[in-house]
Structures are given as structure tokens and as C-alpha cells.
Length: 105
Image (cartoon, rainbow, N blue to C red; front, side):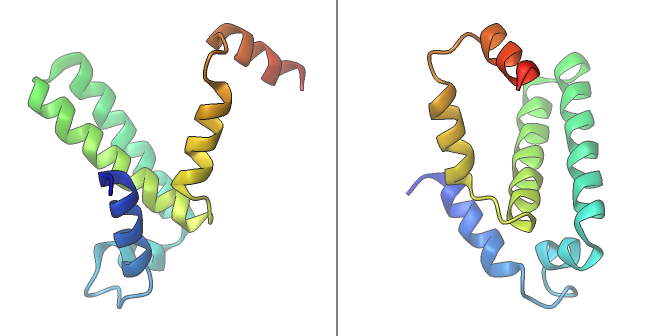
């Protein structure tokens, strides 16, 4: 099994735990706005690491961002499979053309 699907399963399993015993549960207890804010914070930290940090810093911040993104997706009942299907759908499409198509829709 791949790492991200395994992590997604772990996050789903911990979502219903007591907030005092699970970081994932504590995020969920604070609600979607707090989860989304955490994703934003981690994205900002990843960008800063990319611009000024070491390779190891970029790796660590990217891992934090992916983790928190999976927490947010789970909170919205969006599976990693849904996201992967969308990426598959976009494969072979120019990023410029794909973005223009979203604008027109």
C-alpha cells in the first residue's frame, strides 16, 4: 500500500478519538475553519522553506502540508482517490488550457 492512502486511513481512524489523545481528533474538534487555517499555515511554511530553507526543511514542510491537506480533505469527505481521479482526468492537458477551461465554466 502506498504511503498517502495509508496515512489517509490512519487519519480517518483517529478522527473519532478523544481530542486529548489524538492530534487529528483535536484538529477536528476545533472545526473545519481551524483545519483550513492550519493548511494555510503549513503551505506558507512550505513556500518559505522552498525559498530560504535547506532541502531537509522543504521535505519536512512538504510532509506537514500533505498531512494537513489530508486532514482537511477528510473533514470535507473528499477522498484521496477523488483527488487522484481529478489529476488523472487532467493528465495530458496543458495547464494553460485547463486553467482557461475553468475560467469559462
